Length: 163
Length: 166
Image (cartoon, rainbow over all chains, first blue to last red; front, side, top):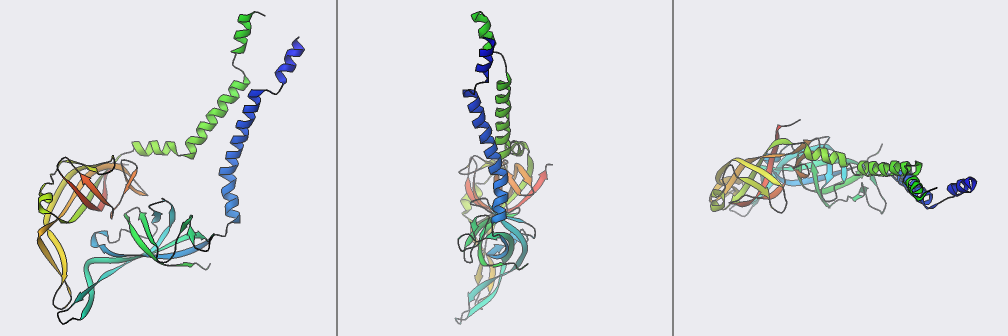
């Protein structure tokens, strides 16, 4: 009777099946989270790009809030889309009309245009540049944030960085 | 074997129970790591005191006069407390117009007001910036609507500086 009991205990049962499923699931999750990104990176065609964004008419209060080394985050998806390599502040232009009808262009007091150069790793999965799966093209308005500023900028150019 | 003994034998803690407990704990640990739950809890409890400076351009004088120092303000449309208004000052609204030569000239409109002031707020201030209440990102350039018991207005944040914190 003891032999019969031992044989019964060794039989593959329902609990063993559940355990096996749980273990397989855990192994699957571990492989998916650790190995998948590495293989994706191995087979991806990523390359370095630099794109330039412009903000027009920024108040003097925001002067120098965007600085080199700031990480750029797109505010709708919260995806990181590169690092600021350069931010140039220049006086905004004021276009006025003189009493004789002439159009006069001069510096706008207290207002600046900001030109931001951002470097990032990009891919081109569907014929256009994507940084962290966020498409970036010239002419696109990008809502973004850096640690000390939040706003919108228009991308004016994007190009691959030759290594 | 009596029924009582068989029953107590069934309830005994065995290797399978142990394995299940280990696996369940492993799953919980995985979820915690995956969703950075510990970081979030730490972020929520860490409180830095900051001074949030703001400005409002071209406000109606009646609304500007309804702003009271010391009142608690909230961010409209959210559950976030912006903080206590420390101080504010009201000036005639600054405008820029072209003169006869087409050049910009700064002047002041006495029918409208510019308001500048600051709140004392709490949140997390780290390398990524300031998070009101630990989660709502705020930075200079952010426009939001603030409301107290007596007034509501839209403002733009001009500066966030840390007062105290780690």
